Image 1 (cartoon, helix red, strand yellow):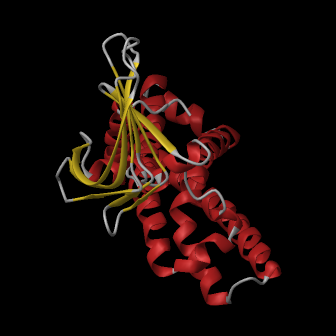
Image 2 (tube, rainbow, N blue to C red; image 1 turned 180 degrees about the vertical axis):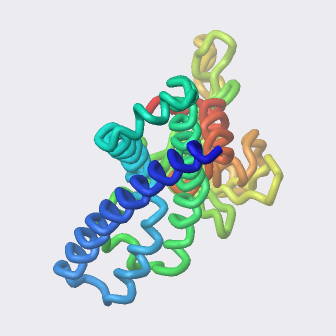
Length: 275
């Protein structure tokens, strides 16, 4: 037990020294860079720095874990402590298992920072810093939204139809410029529904479409397509406002569980998740 404590003390000492040095370097570089740009007050720079700590700590921690292992092994070898430890009956496999356990503990901390704390700090930025978020270089590519995947409109596919829209207003639960393309069992375009705006209700798949134009019978060659203009009509889009909120979600604000559910949901909607 005493030898295990000795190994643990040396490993964690090397880890925290490496962590302190790297954090200092990153902190100085980030703070000096933003201070020289002089776009926001010092207090806002400090807020952004503190909220960025979980994000870049998750990058630094794996490197510190490797350095801690190398430095501790080098220390034991230079002082002949490694030979003494092995000569006292501790097997090499036991020594390696100890190092693996230390690395696993720190890796779990890194996973927690990446999967929970970093998304939380990204959401907190929008609340605390509001309009200043986009003024920092680290926030320029703040996230990937479905609306930026395809220029101009958001497209998604569901059973029997392909839908596009321009903007979803999550506060008013309205969709601007929805267009729905229906196709038959032979994958032939059967009808198109254009609308100026669609208004939804919470957890309901039924939407109120305004200034609607419906073009029917597109898959029937013997009949000329029928066009119908409707001022207002209730229409089942098969998606609720919550589904559109998920499409518009900034992926950097999702923790691991929500990110997994988000990916599965947009896969069902026909969006590419490989990127």
